[in-house]
Image (tube, rainbow, N blue to C red; front, side, top):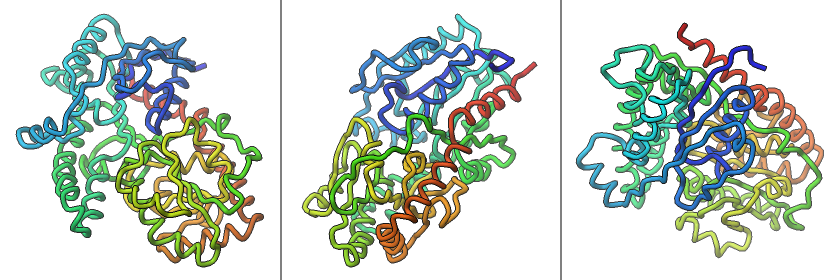
Length: 416
């Protein structure tokens, strides 16, 4: 057990259990890992479609309070874009009720650490650290840790340059340009106000230091519960070779990845292996993907209760991302399940993987297709890559390795 007990208050944009997307899963694992060793409390928003009763590892050791998520219409967003200078993400979860509940809690109890999960929760810095309290500790006496899940300004910057080349996407490009410029200023402000900033990769940490040159950023990678993702013999998804991609399918980088793969890469694979199939596993497929439904080689599953059987049953897992930031949980999941993976360099960004050892890296359509075809034809190579991938994840990304690194950030930061 950790020698020093630290009381921690987490502020999360959604109830992290049951985890229904990557962010919730990461929050769930981190919070439950810490809750086994420290008193942890959680003030969370509740998604409109989310059950309020929570199960799993957090119910017992964790004191939880929830506030309904505020609703913002498209008209609200448009109005705010015109009359404020704050980015969309700073306004999405602005709630007087949440601010009031947080202020009451801080007045009632003393926390050593307040851990803010993501930029959408950053407006509540004003409650934790009123501006007039000067630098250093806020009025609450707590150390404020800001966990920047993705370097958000970088995501919008990349989305802007991707959309700029396609006239039909210019409205999206204009939105991304405005958000990129606003986020750059806002994200810098948030990083300066927090006592400690966490980034998920060296690339994200470097991007944040470009905003705030002297920033103290701790790199804490996303982790995975390797016990929950264990390689086991799984029934194949189909009698023909199956390629799988997982992710929330209304998230722009995922939509872009799937469209590029189907339009540019899949035909090249089918020229060599005609019966190859592609499964897109994830909730809320965006309408831009509707065109793929008529392709007999492509399946959009929509929401599934558990992605693991799909990943485990695939012949090869593909991560063809061309836009994005942060680190990709889908890559960790596939590697933990001992799968052979082909990814773009951006798709594997932030992980110190080596091409040809833990997975194959390819960026052009021809190279990506060739890498997939080589694996479809070589079961031994698939198995060797899968074994190396599993060992890599166990050594670096299991939560049992990562939770102590977060504790070290809390510890190092504690004001005597």
